[in-house]
Length: 264
Image (cartoon, rainbow, N blue to C red):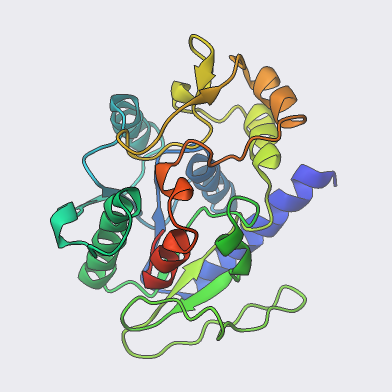
Protein backbone atom coordinates (compact mmCIF):
# COMPACT_ATOMS: atom_id res chain seq x y z
CA UNK A 1 0.00 0.00 0.00
CA UNK A 2 1.12 3.56 -0.61
CA UNK A 3 0.92 6.29 2.03
CA UNK A 4 -2.68 7.28 1.23
CA UNK A 5 -3.79 3.64 1.25
CA UNK A 6 -2.27 3.23 4.72
CA UNK A 7 -3.99 6.34 6.05
CA UNK A 8 -7.30 5.25 4.52
CA UNK A 9 -7.04 1.75 6.03
CA UNK A 10 -6.23 3.15 9.47
CA UNK A 11 -9.16 5.58 9.36
CA UNK A 12 -11.57 2.87 8.19
CA UNK A 13 -10.41 0.67 11.07
CA UNK A 14 -10.98 3.52 13.57
CA UNK A 15 -14.48 4.22 12.21
CA UNK A 16 -15.45 0.55 12.43
CA UNK A 17 -14.07 0.32 15.98
CA UNK A 18 -16.10 3.38 16.98
CA UNK A 19 -19.27 1.95 15.43
CA UNK A 20 -18.73 -1.37 17.21
CA UNK A 21 -17.99 0.09 20.64
CA UNK A 22 -19.99 3.31 20.96
CA UNK A 23 -23.77 3.61 20.79
CA UNK A 24 -25.35 6.05 20.10
CA UNK A 25 -22.70 7.45 17.77
CA UNK A 26 -22.72 10.51 15.49
CA UNK A 27 -20.24 12.27 13.20
CA UNK A 28 -19.60 16.02 13.12
CA UNK A 29 -19.93 17.51 9.63
CA UNK A 30 -18.55 21.04 9.42
CA UNK A 31 -18.82 21.07 5.59
CA UNK A 32 -15.07 21.64 5.19
CA UNK A 33 -12.44 19.56 3.41
CA UNK A 34 -11.55 17.39 6.42
CA UNK A 35 -15.10 16.48 7.38
CA UNK A 36 -15.97 15.74 3.74
CA UNK A 37 -13.04 13.32 3.62
CA UNK A 38 -14.33 11.81 6.86
CA UNK A 39 -17.81 11.26 5.43
CA UNK A 40 -16.22 9.72 2.33
CA UNK A 41 -14.18 7.33 4.49
CA UNK A 42 -17.29 6.36 6.46
CA UNK A 43 -19.07 5.50 3.22
CA UNK A 44 -16.11 3.29 2.31
CA UNK A 45 -16.03 1.70 5.75
CA UNK A 46 -19.72 0.74 5.66
CA UNK A 47 -20.33 -0.35 2.09
CA UNK A 48 -21.46 2.96 0.67
CA UNK A 49 -23.74 4.15 3.46
CA UNK A 50 -23.00 6.16 6.61
CA UNK A 51 -24.79 4.12 9.31
CA UNK A 52 -24.95 6.86 11.94
CA UNK A 53 -26.21 10.46 11.89
CA UNK A 54 -24.02 13.39 10.85
CA UNK A 55 -24.38 16.58 12.89
CA UNK A 56 -23.97 20.17 11.80
CA UNK A 57 -23.62 22.48 14.80
CA UNK A 58 -24.81 25.66 13.10
CA UNK A 59 -23.75 29.12 14.21
CA UNK A 60 -25.88 30.71 11.49
CA UNK A 61 -22.75 32.50 10.26
CA UNK A 62 -21.31 30.13 7.68
CA UNK A 63 -20.66 31.22 4.12
CA UNK A 64 -23.70 30.89 1.80
CA UNK A 65 -21.69 28.44 -0.33
CA UNK A 66 -21.36 26.15 2.69
CA UNK A 67 -25.11 26.00 3.34
CA UNK A 68 -25.73 25.31 -0.33
CA UNK A 69 -23.18 22.47 -0.21
CA UNK A 70 -24.80 21.02 2.94
CA UNK A 71 -28.26 20.97 1.43
CA UNK A 72 -27.05 19.42 -1.84
CA UNK A 73 -24.72 16.74 -0.50
CA UNK A 74 -26.74 15.65 2.51
CA UNK A 75 -29.23 14.45 -0.12
CA UNK A 76 -26.71 13.12 -2.66
CA UNK A 77 -24.88 11.15 0.03
CA UNK A 78 -28.16 10.07 1.72
CA UNK A 79 -27.04 11.35 5.11
CA UNK A 80 -29.10 11.31 8.28
CA UNK A 81 -28.49 14.99 9.02
CA UNK A 82 -29.02 16.39 12.51
CA UNK A 83 -29.02 20.19 12.83
CA UNK A 84 -28.37 22.07 16.04
CA UNK A 85 -28.28 25.80 16.73
CA UNK A 86 -25.74 27.64 18.89
CA UNK A 87 -26.56 30.05 21.73
CA UNK A 88 -25.87 33.78 21.30
CA UNK A 89 -22.37 35.11 21.86
CA UNK A 90 -23.60 37.14 24.86
CA UNK A 91 -23.94 33.88 26.79
CA UNK A 92 -20.29 32.92 26.24
CA UNK A 93 -17.38 33.53 28.63
CA UNK A 94 -16.70 37.30 28.47
CA UNK A 95 -13.05 36.77 29.46
CA UNK A 96 -12.32 35.16 26.07
CA UNK A 97 -10.98 37.33 23.23
CA UNK A 98 -13.69 38.37 20.71
CA UNK A 99 -13.11 35.74 17.98
CA UNK A 100 -12.59 32.93 20.51
CA UNK A 101 -15.76 34.00 22.31
CA UNK A 102 -17.65 33.80 19.02
CA UNK A 103 -16.17 30.37 18.30
CA UNK A 104 -17.17 29.19 21.79
CA UNK A 105 -20.79 29.20 20.62
CA UNK A 106 -20.03 25.92 18.82
CA UNK A 107 -18.80 24.38 22.07
CA UNK A 108 -22.11 25.12 23.76
CA UNK A 109 -24.11 24.06 20.71
CA UNK A 110 -22.28 20.75 20.49
CA UNK A 111 -22.74 20.08 24.21
CA UNK A 112 -26.49 20.61 23.81
CA UNK A 113 -26.66 18.16 20.89
CA UNK A 114 -24.64 15.52 22.75
CA UNK A 115 -27.00 15.77 25.71
CA UNK A 116 -30.13 15.85 23.56
CA UNK A 117 -29.19 12.68 21.66
CA UNK A 118 -27.45 11.03 24.66
CA UNK A 119 -24.37 10.32 22.54
CA UNK A 120 -21.63 8.00 23.76
CA UNK A 121 -19.40 8.74 20.78
CA UNK A 122 -18.76 11.79 18.58
CA UNK A 123 -16.55 11.45 15.48
CA UNK A 124 -14.60 14.62 14.68
CA UNK A 125 -12.28 15.52 11.80
CA UNK A 126 -9.34 17.10 13.61
CA UNK A 127 -5.69 16.53 12.66
CA UNK A 128 -2.58 16.77 14.83
CA UNK A 129 -0.73 18.97 12.33
CA UNK A 130 -3.46 21.61 12.24
CA UNK A 131 -2.80 23.28 15.60
CA UNK A 132 -0.47 22.67 18.54
CA UNK A 133 -3.19 21.88 21.10
CA UNK A 134 -4.67 19.24 18.81
CA UNK A 135 -1.34 17.42 18.78
CA UNK A 136 -2.10 16.41 22.39
CA UNK A 137 -5.21 14.43 21.40
CA UNK A 138 -5.73 10.67 21.36
CA UNK A 139 -7.65 8.81 18.65
CA UNK A 140 -10.30 7.81 21.22
CA UNK A 141 -10.40 10.76 23.62
CA UNK A 142 -12.69 10.67 26.68
CA UNK A 143 -14.63 13.78 27.69
CA UNK A 144 -15.99 14.19 31.21
CA UNK A 145 -19.60 14.59 32.26
CA UNK A 146 -19.30 18.36 31.75
CA UNK A 147 -17.77 17.78 28.26
CA UNK A 148 -14.35 18.89 29.51
CA UNK A 149 -11.11 17.44 28.16
CA UNK A 150 -8.53 16.45 30.78
CA UNK A 151 -5.30 16.78 28.78
CA UNK A 152 -3.23 15.12 31.52
CA UNK A 153 -5.47 12.08 31.89
CA UNK A 154 -5.64 10.49 28.45
CA UNK A 155 -5.54 6.71 27.89
CA UNK A 156 -2.41 5.20 26.29
CA UNK A 157 -2.86 3.94 22.72
CA UNK A 158 -0.37 1.23 21.79
CA UNK A 159 -0.46 -0.98 18.68
CA UNK A 160 -3.82 0.44 17.52
CA UNK A 161 -5.52 -0.65 20.74
CA UNK A 162 -8.07 2.00 21.71
CA UNK A 163 -9.67 2.27 25.15
CA UNK A 164 -13.30 3.35 25.44
CA UNK A 165 -13.85 4.04 29.15
CA UNK A 166 -17.41 4.94 30.02
CA UNK A 167 -18.87 6.62 33.07
CA UNK A 168 -22.26 8.21 33.53
CA UNK A 169 -22.53 11.43 31.53
CA UNK A 170 -19.22 11.16 29.70
CA UNK A 171 -18.61 10.55 26.00
CA UNK A 172 -15.73 9.67 23.66
CA UNK A 173 -14.42 11.91 20.87
CA UNK A 174 -13.14 9.79 17.99
CA UNK A 175 -10.54 11.24 15.61
CA UNK A 176 -10.04 9.09 12.49
CA UNK A 177 -7.97 11.79 10.71
CA UNK A 178 -5.55 12.50 13.55
CA UNK A 179 -2.51 11.12 11.68
CA UNK A 180 -3.32 12.86 8.39
CA UNK A 181 -1.57 16.05 7.24
CA UNK A 182 -3.17 18.88 5.29
CA UNK A 183 -1.39 17.80 2.11
CA UNK A 184 -2.57 14.19 2.64
CA UNK A 185 -6.15 15.45 2.75
CA UNK A 186 -5.71 17.27 -0.55
CA UNK A 187 -3.96 14.39 -2.27
CA UNK A 188 -6.74 12.06 -1.14
CA UNK A 189 -9.41 14.50 -2.36
CA UNK A 190 -7.67 14.57 -5.75
CA UNK A 191 -7.33 10.79 -5.91
CA UNK A 192 -10.92 10.08 -4.87
CA UNK A 193 -12.68 12.99 -6.58
CA UNK A 194 -14.30 14.20 -3.35
CA UNK A 195 -16.59 17.26 -3.76
CA UNK A 196 -15.68 20.49 -1.95
CA UNK A 197 -16.99 23.97 -1.33
CA UNK A 198 -15.33 26.04 -4.05
CA UNK A 199 -14.10 28.69 -1.58
CA UNK A 200 -10.97 26.55 -1.23
CA UNK A 201 -9.91 27.58 -4.74
CA UNK A 202 -8.42 30.96 -5.61
CA UNK A 203 -10.48 33.90 -6.82
CA UNK A 204 -8.77 37.21 -7.53
CA UNK A 205 -5.56 36.10 -5.86
CA UNK A 206 -7.10 34.76 -2.64
CA UNK A 207 -8.51 31.49 -1.33
CA UNK A 208 -9.58 29.93 1.97
CA UNK A 209 -7.39 27.22 3.47
CA UNK A 210 -9.69 26.69 6.44
CA UNK A 211 -13.43 27.39 6.52
CA UNK A 212 -15.25 28.65 9.60
CA UNK A 213 -17.73 31.41 10.33
CA UNK A 214 -17.69 34.13 7.70
CA UNK A 215 -17.15 36.91 10.25
CA UNK A 216 -14.02 35.38 11.84
CA UNK A 217 -12.41 33.65 8.84
CA UNK A 218 -10.33 35.34 6.15
CA UNK A 219 -8.75 34.15 2.89
CA UNK A 220 -5.00 33.90 2.32
CA UNK A 221 -3.12 35.15 -0.70
CA UNK A 222 -2.99 32.42 -3.33
CA UNK A 223 -3.35 31.76 -7.04
CA UNK A 224 -4.10 28.04 -6.58
CA UNK A 225 -7.33 27.53 -8.51
CA UNK A 226 -7.19 23.76 -9.10
CA UNK A 227 -6.50 20.69 -6.99
CA UNK A 228 -3.08 20.23 -8.57
CA UNK A 229 -2.18 23.86 -7.89
CA UNK A 230 -3.33 23.65 -4.26
CA UNK A 231 -1.15 20.57 -3.72
CA UNK A 232 1.81 22.25 -5.41
CA UNK A 233 1.35 25.32 -3.20
CA UNK A 234 1.24 23.24 -0.02
CA UNK A 235 4.52 21.56 -0.91
CA UNK A 236 6.35 24.87 -0.53
CA UNK A 237 4.25 27.27 1.57
CA UNK A 238 5.32 28.38 5.03
CA UNK A 239 1.97 29.99 5.80
CA UNK A 240 -0.02 28.30 8.58
CA UNK A 241 -3.20 26.49 7.56
CA UNK A 242 -5.16 28.48 10.15
CA UNK A 243 -3.62 31.82 9.19
CA UNK A 244 -7.10 33.03 8.22
CA UNK A 245 -8.70 32.09 11.55
CA UNK A 246 -9.05 35.22 13.68
CA UNK A 247 -8.95 33.44 17.03
CA UNK A 248 -5.54 31.93 16.23
CA UNK A 249 -4.13 35.48 16.31
CA UNK A 250 -5.54 36.26 19.75
CA UNK A 251 -4.08 35.24 23.13
CA UNK A 252 -1.93 32.12 23.09
CA UNK A 253 -4.11 30.17 25.51
CA UNK A 254 -7.50 31.00 23.93
CA UNK A 255 -7.61 27.92 21.66
CA UNK A 256 -6.53 25.56 24.43
CA UNK A 257 -9.14 27.01 26.78
CA UNK A 258 -11.79 26.30 24.14
CA UNK A 259 -10.51 22.75 23.57
CA UNK A 260 -10.47 21.95 27.28
CA UNK A 261 -14.05 23.20 27.53
CA UNK A 262 -15.17 20.89 24.70
CA UNK A 263 -14.52 22.82 21.48
CA UNK A 264 -14.74 20.88 18.20
